Amino acid sequence: MGVLSKDQIHRILHNELRDPFSVLGMHEDKKGVSVRVFMPGAESVRVLSRGTSGKALCTLEQVNGEGVFEGYVPRRKKVFPYDLEVTWHAGDITQTADPYSFLPVMSEESRYFYNEGTHERLFDDLGSHVREIEGVKG
Image 1 (cartoon, rainbow, N blue to C red):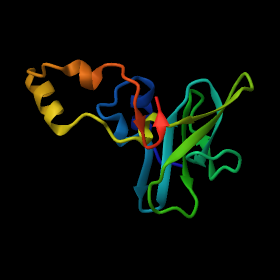
Image 2 (image 1 turned 90 degrees about the vertical axis):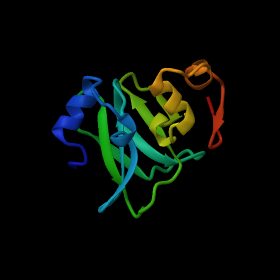
Image 3 (image 1 turned 180 degrees about the horizontal axis):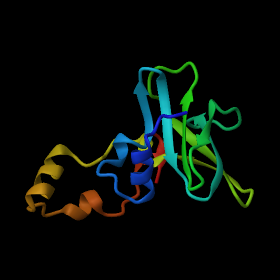
Image 4 (image 1 turned 60 degrees about the vertical axis):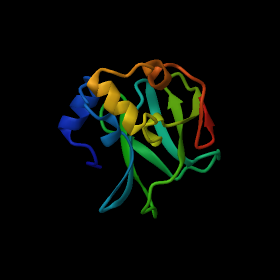
């Protein structure tokens, strides 16, 4: 398939991505819309329209034996809300939202104060809080 370079795959596997959103998730390029995920322990990954089950838009190809999958969604030119259907090696099948399908939720102001080292309520942005984003609770 060739969406990801060998260097990008290496960085995914060794947790060396400075900006994982720039590599993982759904992306538009000259060929259309690609999806890249890291699912260690998965046997296969399919892309579904968000909130649906059943008919997959595409099945991602595993590019190594360690859980990196990629592929193109046919006939799509723009990014769209999607879920992943994951078949695990044990045979279980789960449907989940791809965490990289959401834009970062930290505001520009919060990032500024964080980088400056003066953010006084960092727990509001980086703490664990139940939220609903694009109709997905988590």
